[in-house]
Length: 72
Image 1 (cartoon, rainbow, N blue to C red):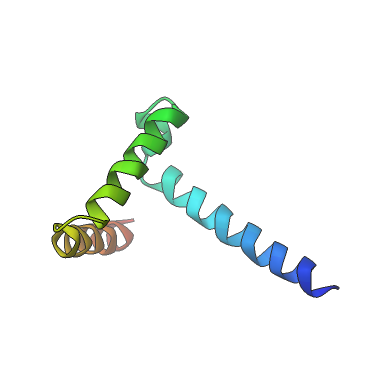
Image 2 (spheres, helix red, strand yellow):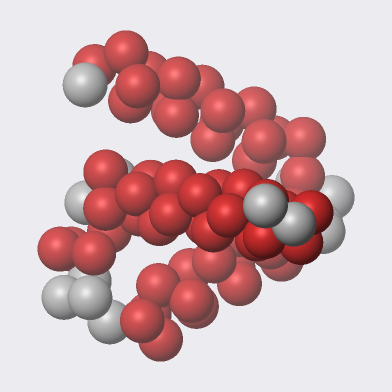
């Protein structure tokens, strides 16, 4: 298998895992699979991560994510 094929498969697997997180969090169902709304929420997250609230947001989201993995 060529190097670019291996890298493409690795990237595809990673993207599938990220999409799985959207489903696992219930975002797809809660938004009615509204992609504009989901994208808007992701843009809001990106803005938070570029603001002076970055460290607070990272700590909060990391704790919530760890708890979510433990609960499920």
